[in-house]
Length: 312
Image (cartoon, rainbow, N blue to C red; front, top):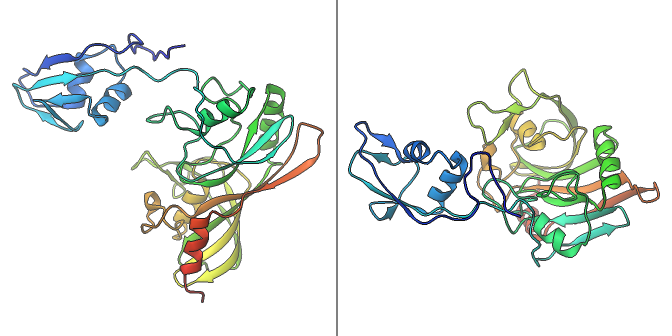
């Protein structure tokens, strides 16, 4: 089934378009194309530019390229992403499963479901290949997905096998009866061996790709932590979140001056990856009603990072 955006035009790829820029005033490339190609969304045009499908005078150009007059622009539209997640035969590490729930170990760097810039190779593409039936309550692009982890975060993730299980798990998340425990390495030395961060989280108005806990407004969020070990320049933590806000752990620790190690988006120094791992999750399974706890072992690259740090 083809995917259609509002105002996106035909679903099939179109022949290469050649456009001459003759406007009197200099104009950015992306803005010019948005004006000239109103049948396509802004995000699709930008994706073509990033993919090198837009040439200015025969060469790829950035969206910010300033057109000054006389340029020849070639656009090779690509087909929009599918509305339905396509199965892909890629590995999935299953930590637990029953008739209602699957718990998988998501590696860092893997996107959970399709979105801007990611339409294949996601965890969902793998799941629909390995499992015959998943909940459809999240939509055709997110079958089975009840909650999510950031692309750079590894660890345990729950997947609903049917709609009743999805509703039951979603109710547990809403009631905050799902226990979520993370392992995190943060920069600097936290003054206390345990503590709470209770700060609202909102979209960062200065940088829309991240959140912030430095504003008075936002959604209520609570993060609890306990120090596991102290290293020179770092603190290793067990972290529990009572709420599940976007980037909650990352934004909270950045707000108190201790960003998660490797998290450059929130001001940390570069590292092998973001040191944030969804270690344990406990929930009541809709298949029988028993309490289940699932654990995802700390990935090898994070364990090696710890091993190389000098202990205080």
